[in-house]
Length: 343
Ligand code: ADP
Ligand code: MG
Image: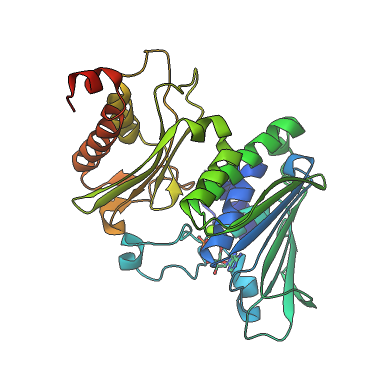
């Protein structure tokens, strides 16, 4: 009869890493989310070999105090929530306290950080968590830089699942696209193998925002999209929806954010599809960049570790609001309705 044993922490983290760290892009997602949660106004992302060799994310956020550095790499360690009440109204992108623990268990990770109160920065370094985190003095402005090298170096089975450099980098780029669409107030740069691939300044005005969307989603999209903004029953939906003149053969230009978090949701997808139903051919897909803002207490974001799914308390209300808002926006441009003068 086998005996029951507690897993050693490193193994437990590596197992948990399977849920959050699928590929380099998942690391980029978690690190950029941390930067944004730290109030960064600029986030610089650098990757080498599609991220398999190096991922470096640097921000100008509020940093981590030296005393907190070792804890930041521990599992279930977070500064973002302290109670169930906090979780129910969570306003940050992170809250599970798992990302850095997971990532550091499957890579060589170094984190350098400095808060405004500190004279100098400090650096913590771990290699697949084989040794205790060592802390050394370092030079760094206020903010944080996380370097992740040799992802999956100690989990060869996972490393084998990495695709080509180009494919992995495409995923990284898509991840940055989503983050840059979700936070217009922050500037982003993305470098691959030392080449600047994306450079976006903070976008304050509608014009700046449309310029950013143009460079992320293509000028064609923004030229064929209308800006909507509707508020009702405690819900706000705003963003850009492409006119039926700009449809896609694939559902590859569809971004839907709920309180700043990009999500994939059946209910949302259904509402959008219904709204476009009589203006698009069956085999065509709409293109949109939409932002839904709801009271955080009415949506559960803790459905899956990657937080790509949400659960609305009143799904029906949300569905109908999205449908009605988009249907009206499209009705305004539907030629038949114009002729009939009907909306
Ligand atoms: P979570 O984001 O869910 O709290 P993480 O493992 O991603 O968990 O990060 C652990 C903690 O480390 C965070 O709660 C935060 O306090 C700190 N942290 C991580 N990255 C940064 C950063 N770029 N700037 C400031 N603090 C950070
Ligand atoms: Mg996090």
